Length: 205
Image 1 (cartoon, one colour):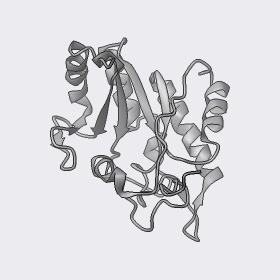
Image 2 (tube, helix red, strand yellow):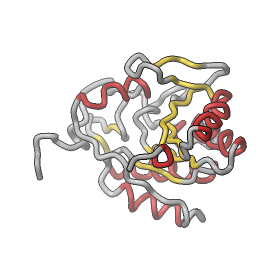
Image 3 (cartoon, helix red, strand yellow):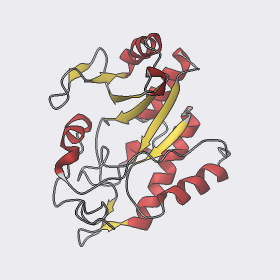
Protein backbone atom coordinates (compact mmCIF):
# COMPACT_ATOMS: atom_id res chain seq x y z
CA UNK A 1 0.00 0.00 0.00
CA UNK A 2 0.98 3.62 -0.41
CA UNK A 3 0.19 6.14 2.31
CA UNK A 4 1.13 9.80 3.02
CA UNK A 5 3.12 8.50 5.98
CA UNK A 6 5.50 6.97 3.43
CA UNK A 7 6.11 10.28 1.64
CA UNK A 8 9.03 12.69 1.71
CA UNK A 9 8.17 16.21 0.50
CA UNK A 10 10.84 18.25 -1.33
CA UNK A 11 11.30 21.90 -0.36
CA UNK A 12 13.32 24.41 -2.38
CA UNK A 13 14.56 27.06 0.03
CA UNK A 14 15.79 30.53 -0.83
CA UNK A 15 16.88 33.71 0.90
CA UNK A 16 14.61 36.68 1.67
CA UNK A 17 11.26 37.08 3.38
CA UNK A 18 7.74 36.32 2.20
CA UNK A 19 9.17 34.65 -0.91
CA UNK A 20 6.93 32.16 -2.68
CA UNK A 21 8.12 31.89 -6.27
CA UNK A 22 6.26 29.38 -8.39
CA UNK A 23 8.58 26.97 -10.21
CA UNK A 24 7.76 27.13 -13.95
CA UNK A 25 8.77 23.51 -14.56
CA UNK A 26 6.74 22.23 -11.60
CA UNK A 27 3.33 23.95 -11.52
CA UNK A 28 1.99 24.26 -8.00
CA UNK A 29 5.47 23.98 -6.43
CA UNK A 30 7.41 26.92 -5.06
CA UNK A 31 10.77 28.25 -4.05
CA UNK A 32 10.17 29.35 -0.44
CA UNK A 33 11.99 31.67 1.93
CA UNK A 34 12.83 30.28 5.36
CA UNK A 35 10.06 32.23 7.12
CA UNK A 36 7.52 30.29 5.03
CA UNK A 37 8.75 26.89 6.20
CA UNK A 38 7.02 26.49 9.59
CA UNK A 39 3.58 26.92 8.01
CA UNK A 40 4.55 24.53 5.23
CA UNK A 41 5.68 22.01 7.83
CA UNK A 42 2.41 22.29 9.75
CA UNK A 43 0.39 21.69 6.60
CA UNK A 44 2.44 18.62 5.76
CA UNK A 45 2.02 17.21 9.25
CA UNK A 46 -1.76 17.73 9.01
CA UNK A 47 -1.59 15.62 5.83
CA UNK A 48 0.40 12.96 7.73
CA UNK A 49 3.54 13.57 5.67
CA UNK A 50 6.36 12.96 8.16
CA UNK A 51 9.47 14.19 6.34
CA UNK A 52 10.90 16.89 4.09
CA UNK A 53 13.93 16.92 1.79
CA UNK A 54 15.71 20.29 1.53
CA UNK A 55 17.36 21.82 -1.51
CA UNK A 56 19.04 25.22 -1.13
CA UNK A 57 19.27 28.22 -3.41
CA UNK A 58 22.25 30.27 -2.22
CA UNK A 59 22.58 34.03 -2.01
CA UNK A 60 25.61 33.81 -4.29
CA UNK A 61 27.50 31.09 -6.11
CA UNK A 62 31.22 30.43 -6.45
CA UNK A 63 33.48 27.74 -7.99
CA UNK A 64 33.65 25.78 -4.71
CA UNK A 65 29.94 26.00 -3.83
CA UNK A 66 30.88 27.38 -0.42
CA UNK A 67 27.35 28.11 0.83
CA UNK A 68 26.63 24.37 0.71
CA UNK A 69 28.84 23.81 3.77
CA UNK A 70 28.68 27.25 5.43
CA UNK A 71 27.38 27.12 9.03
CA UNK A 72 24.96 29.95 8.17
CA UNK A 73 24.05 28.59 4.72
CA UNK A 74 20.49 28.59 3.49
CA UNK A 75 19.89 24.88 4.14
CA UNK A 76 21.49 25.02 7.57
CA UNK A 77 19.22 27.96 8.45
CA UNK A 78 16.21 26.09 7.10
CA UNK A 79 17.00 22.98 9.15
CA UNK A 80 17.20 24.97 12.39
CA UNK A 81 13.95 26.78 11.61
CA UNK A 82 12.04 23.61 10.81
CA UNK A 83 13.35 21.72 13.84
CA UNK A 84 12.58 24.65 16.14
CA UNK A 85 9.02 24.76 14.81
CA UNK A 86 8.47 20.98 14.95
CA UNK A 87 11.20 18.77 16.44
CA UNK A 88 9.34 15.64 15.31
CA UNK A 89 9.38 16.56 11.62
CA UNK A 90 12.05 14.48 9.91
CA UNK A 91 14.40 16.79 8.03
CA UNK A 92 16.53 15.30 5.25
CA UNK A 93 19.17 17.34 3.43
CA UNK A 94 20.34 16.83 -0.12
CA UNK A 95 24.14 16.67 -0.29
CA UNK A 96 25.38 18.05 -3.60
CA UNK A 97 27.17 21.15 -4.85
CA UNK A 98 25.43 21.85 -8.16
CA UNK A 99 22.97 24.39 -6.71
CA UNK A 100 25.84 26.30 -5.11
CA UNK A 101 28.55 26.37 -7.79
CA UNK A 102 28.68 29.15 -10.36
CA UNK A 103 29.40 26.58 -13.09
CA UNK A 104 26.46 24.35 -12.13
CA UNK A 105 28.48 21.15 -11.88
CA UNK A 106 28.31 18.82 -8.89
CA UNK A 107 31.99 19.10 -8.04
CA UNK A 108 35.25 21.00 -8.33
CA UNK A 109 36.17 21.76 -11.95
CA UNK A 110 39.83 21.44 -12.93
CA UNK A 111 41.62 23.67 -15.44
CA UNK A 112 41.04 21.04 -18.09
CA UNK A 113 37.30 21.16 -17.46
CA UNK A 114 37.08 17.78 -15.72
CA UNK A 115 35.58 17.16 -12.28
CA UNK A 116 38.09 16.50 -9.49
CA UNK A 117 36.36 13.63 -7.73
CA UNK A 118 38.56 13.46 -4.61
CA UNK A 119 38.65 17.21 -3.99
CA UNK A 120 34.87 17.23 -4.31
CA UNK A 121 34.53 14.47 -1.69
CA UNK A 122 36.14 16.73 0.89
CA UNK A 123 33.56 19.47 0.27
CA UNK A 124 30.66 17.02 0.25
CA UNK A 125 31.84 15.68 3.60
CA UNK A 126 31.98 19.22 5.01
CA UNK A 127 28.45 19.79 3.69
CA UNK A 128 27.06 16.69 5.39
CA UNK A 129 28.71 17.56 8.70
CA UNK A 130 27.41 21.13 8.63
CA UNK A 131 23.90 19.85 7.96
CA UNK A 132 24.13 17.37 10.83
CA UNK A 133 25.41 20.10 13.15
CA UNK A 134 22.39 22.23 12.17
CA UNK A 135 20.09 19.39 13.21
CA UNK A 136 19.41 17.36 10.07
CA UNK A 137 18.02 13.92 10.81
CA UNK A 138 19.36 12.36 7.59
CA UNK A 139 21.86 13.42 4.91
CA UNK A 140 21.18 12.30 1.35
CA UNK A 141 23.97 12.48 -1.27
CA UNK A 142 22.94 12.91 -4.89
CA UNK A 143 26.21 14.09 -6.42
CA UNK A 144 27.33 10.79 -8.07
CA UNK A 145 30.99 11.17 -7.03
CA UNK A 146 32.83 7.86 -6.59
CA UNK A 147 33.28 7.07 -2.89
CA UNK A 148 30.90 9.70 -1.55
CA UNK A 149 29.09 7.46 0.92
CA UNK A 150 32.30 6.31 2.60
CA UNK A 151 33.60 9.89 2.72
CA UNK A 152 30.40 11.18 4.33
CA UNK A 153 30.32 8.32 6.84
CA UNK A 154 33.90 8.91 7.91
CA UNK A 155 33.40 12.66 8.30
CA UNK A 156 30.15 12.28 10.23
CA UNK A 157 31.69 9.70 12.57
CA UNK A 158 34.81 11.79 13.16
CA UNK A 159 32.67 14.77 14.13
CA UNK A 160 30.40 12.99 16.60
CA UNK A 161 27.47 12.22 14.31
CA UNK A 162 27.77 8.44 14.25
CA UNK A 163 23.98 8.08 14.48
CA UNK A 164 23.19 10.33 11.50
CA UNK A 165 22.00 8.08 8.65
CA UNK A 166 23.06 8.46 5.02
CA UNK A 167 20.19 7.90 2.60
CA UNK A 168 20.91 6.82 -0.95
CA UNK A 169 17.99 8.14 -2.99
CA UNK A 170 19.33 9.23 -6.37
CA UNK A 171 21.03 7.25 -9.12
CA UNK A 172 21.53 9.97 -11.69
CA UNK A 173 21.75 9.49 -15.42
CA UNK A 174 23.30 12.00 -17.81
CA UNK A 175 20.08 12.98 -19.57
CA UNK A 176 17.44 15.69 -19.83
CA UNK A 177 15.26 13.79 -17.34
CA UNK A 178 16.31 16.17 -14.56
CA UNK A 179 15.42 19.32 -16.48
CA UNK A 180 12.48 20.32 -14.24
CA UNK A 181 14.58 19.86 -11.13
CA UNK A 182 17.41 21.94 -12.59
CA UNK A 183 14.94 24.78 -13.10
CA UNK A 184 13.65 24.41 -9.53
CA UNK A 185 17.12 24.33 -7.99
CA UNK A 186 18.69 26.71 -10.54
CA UNK A 187 21.44 24.13 -11.05
CA UNK A 188 21.82 23.62 -14.80
CA UNK A 189 25.47 23.30 -15.91
CA UNK A 190 26.91 26.49 -17.37
CA UNK A 191 28.99 24.47 -19.83
CA UNK A 192 29.38 20.91 -21.01
CA UNK A 193 27.37 18.08 -19.52
CA UNK A 194 27.56 15.58 -16.65
CA UNK A 195 28.60 12.47 -18.56
CA UNK A 196 31.90 12.40 -16.68
CA UNK A 197 30.24 11.54 -13.38
CA UNK A 198 26.64 10.54 -14.09
CA UNK A 199 25.56 7.27 -15.69
CA UNK A 200 24.89 6.46 -19.33
CA UNK A 201 21.18 5.59 -19.54
CA UNK A 202 21.91 3.31 -22.53
CA UNK A 203 24.38 1.19 -20.55
CA UNK A 204 22.45 -1.75 -19.07
CA UNK A 205 25.51 -2.80 -17.07
